[in-house]
Image 1 (cartoon, rainbow, N blue to C red):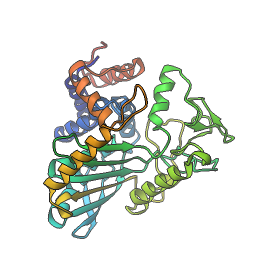
Image 2: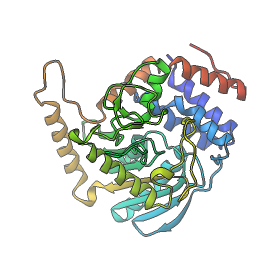
Image 3: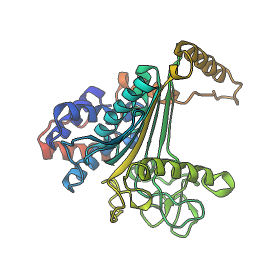
Amino acid sequence: MYQSDYLQNFVQKVFEKIGCPPSEAGLAAEVLLSADLRGIDSHGIARLAGYVRLYDNGRLNPTPKVTIVHETPSTATVDGDRGLGLVVAPQAMKIAMEKAEKVGSGWVSVRNSNHFGIAGYHAMMALEKDMIGWTMTNAAPLVTPTFSLEKLLGTNPVAVAVPANHEPAFVADFASTAVAYGKFEILQRKGLPAPLGWAQDAEGNTTDDSNAVKNGGGLLPLGSDREHGSHKGYGLGAIVDIFSGVLSGANYGPWVPPFATAGFMAAQAGVGLGTGHFLGAMRVDGFRPATEFKENMDTWIQRFRQAKAVEGQQVLIPGDPERESEARRRQEGIPLLEPVVDSLLDLAQRFSIPFERI
């Protein structure tokens, strides 16, 4: 087990070594480690080497000038200048929150960015201001729409964070696919098959091959197949892509550039600038007194917690597993797979940064 402070310090130093200012390197490390703390290992420190490869390939600007290129009192389009999405997205959310403070809600589309870590981190920023946070991002095409043999969409996650009073916040953070691709990367590192319903092979047949996407297949939308509602997952992923890419001027659909860990994918000529995000903040008191709303949220959460459940199970509130994981891992440490440790040791050697195998 690795303590989060130890990993935070290491990740920050790596980002500084590729040229990020210390404050932005620290923020990027915090966003990345938040995934590991919350139990979303697919989007945490396992991706650090991928960000370094983006830099090596000239796709990442470590000192971006994040600028507003278009705005109204409640909206803005932000150009991330090829910066770390881990830094660009929090800046965009701050803009959304500033607009919400003035006019009730703020909505920001982002172009020319990169992978931004877990969507939930950025959405939860709004909780500090008694706001509801929304976050979306498009991603490289790994997903086959219902009945398609072509990969045209990314895993395209959505996160919504809603404040409560005495109860923990409601935080829904999920991909528009059956699972995020990072789950396949974990299975590949372990040499394990994938559950049926996660992917299809190159001929469109459901498969348990965890390498299927690399071998011409694709991830399946949420719902897995038409009979189980995959058209709804396809629709949700399309909405995220349009809001994040088409609305902002970023790439969209099959033209979204791949993250550096997806070495089996070749970047195509783009139709926009970089990867796109969409972030929003809504003031609760723009609709009703915040205290009343949060008390009602407590009631809502408590009632769902009290729901009669199947034997041996309990009804959870979105965000519960992640919150419990964070509390446990802050105390006990963060487990890392051996291939991830190996990649960190490679970075440590390259940049002359101390890192120990535990």
